[in-house]
Amino acid sequence: MDMRMKSTADAAPAVEEETLGESDEVFSSAAELFRLLSTPIRLKIISALCQTEKNVSQLLQEIDTTQPNMSQHLSTLYRAGVLSRRRDATQIYYRIGNERAATLCRAVCMQIALEADDDDRPASERLTLQASEHTP
Image (tube, rainbow, N blue to C red):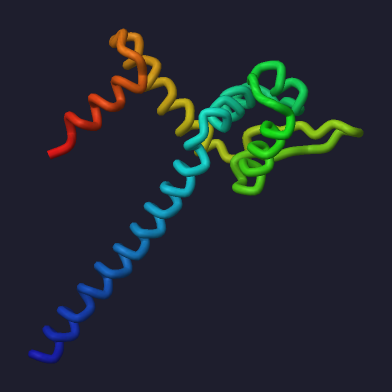
């Protein structure tokens, strides 16, 4: 009976380790997604593509940046699977390829916009104050 108890007790840490391992994978995936979304232009690109696909020229009309910079960010988002693309003759059209990323982008940006409506301070000042409020 002692052997059974020991083997049952030994099994519990293995299950906990497996769960922690899966959590690490989840946190790593979330951190990678946040890293991809950490550039304002990438958030703007995702927002611009939420309703319909667009080519680079159309995106450049909406987002103030250079063509090489736009292409670099589109390529990064495409390689990460956030965007999909298709070729039509000489044009490449981009669209949302990962709805999870678009949903997260919308949710975070919407929440920040709502908070900004309630607070007249500049965003950089609000974020600095909020971070210092949570520091022990």
